[in-house]
Image 1: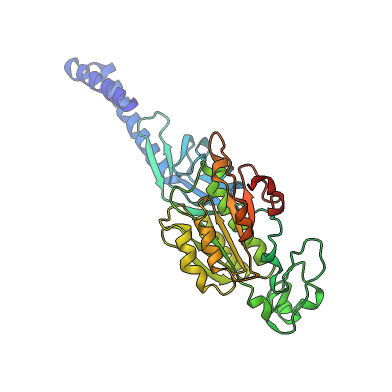
Image 2 (image 1 turned 90 degrees about the vertical axis):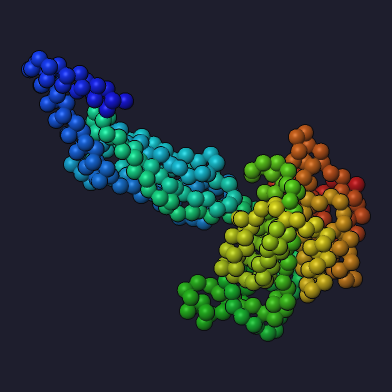
Length: 398
């Protein structure tokens, strides 16, 4: 707009200057040309002098935690820059780091953003900077490509004792109890857990790594826990963090986290469209693999939970070390669990009541017969996972 207005003025002044030799006309033309050259040079030099960096602060992050990012915009030139419009083009719901600033010569300006993020992998950037000369004749737009990505894990909660899941192979729940009983033969080492006794510390590995390490034992090697997460298409109710899908994924992550902290090897089977599987393992690196898989989990599977269980449970070597997380109220999956179970073995079922996430809420009356097959844990909207347990859910079971 400013450039068009100036071009019009120059055209009119030039017309009168060359028609009747008006001195005022020639003065306006020369002044306008000089002003244009100065404005163009100012804009060109400003674009070469400005730089931008954006760096996420130390992670990892869990869903609902505040994500922080540090921006630094610098003017390396001798000319002031004002205004400088910084536009964040990240496609992250509810997150906008755009700002308008003014920069003096050789000045750096740094600020931080803070915003809770949802579970998933988010792209940071691209970022655009818009600036111009003081007269607004030659605006410029600089584009800085994608900076990085940030992975937001599911929310982790301290969870109640899920019965047999923590008790097999001498693995105790650790809530108010003493050091765990130790089998006779050690088979490896792992990160030290506060519930371990002092006699369990492997001092050679502790000295080598610089952090406390504990011995593992043969009976623990057999105590693999399988978490089956139902991700059938259209099984989720609700939006964003307040959906049944987020509750199910958070429950899976919390159970895996607790089991790993108690020395169990954990495997994950998700019934998404890829039938994603994370083999059993222990340690912090394995926990990161599990949390990354759960961070990207989507309810896009096509196979019913019943078919998934019928296909995979017969080959699972520890049928009593099984947690099934689902919103399926039809009950066919219960029959699959009963068929694959052995006498004395009871799996844990985590039923996320999708009906409670509807508007208005329509809680599901869970058949009491389900308790004959497995230990049941019912989660409804608004429940605190740290306080909800199977023994507290009798009123929800019909």
